[in-house]
Length: 325
Image 1 (cartoon, rainbow, N blue to C red):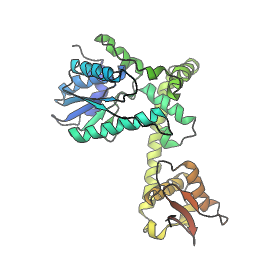
Image 2: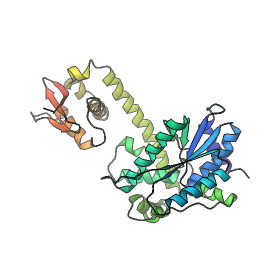
Image 3: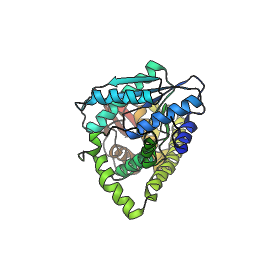
Image 4: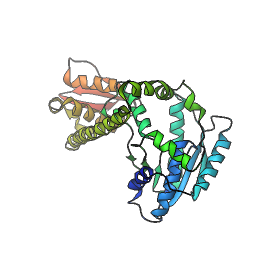
């Protein structure tokens, strides 16, 4: 079998080069074009680096033919030289955030289980630059902050995204070299999902008006925001670490007032979560309400937070206390 395009090989090798021979690396595979291209490339690069390679196929069981899709993807992975293929069936429990979010939660739970079961070093995911641009655009319209707009990371713990800065067309076209046909997920054409609308309607219009470079520019913007956000997070954490027992003594309002707002709001979030606030439903509106106890104090009452925690201002200090009785 011929080798994948050099851009794909370099992208995968750059993220795997520091692993030791014999280490197991896995690829998340749906049977779609992106993931099959990643399976192929990882197989080739893995042999070169003397790594063990495997694939994880998550069967969400959301369509009647899901078992056949998983079995076919398994066969294709084996044809591409993958040594170990694991199929995980999952139950997708609908949440308030929608089916797409619920499927994602179930998928990552399956990945975590496989990482534990196999002792694999990493799982490679096939997100591309186009996926990153879609993510940034969707979050931009929601009024997201720097952390959210920084999008996906090429390295996130044990999850690696080697194709994150490559265009989807380059990845898709690579399969033509070996004549492999990828599965087309019907959900990718169902415009009840926001991402599908963005992909089919907004992205083509964006490219038409601003040119192809708009995609790489959005990706670059996300990378710059990631660096800025990390610097602000680090400064906020340094402030928290320098405090004397926040749970017992709270945060001095005078010291908080002297912080730039971007750092102060991060400090409030860190301390709130550390005090027991549930991070999932903890919103920007909650942080604004807490911050008002610092910068706009006029004797207002406590701020109720998720997890039965209240933010309160007492004797010049901001404290997070339990609201359970």
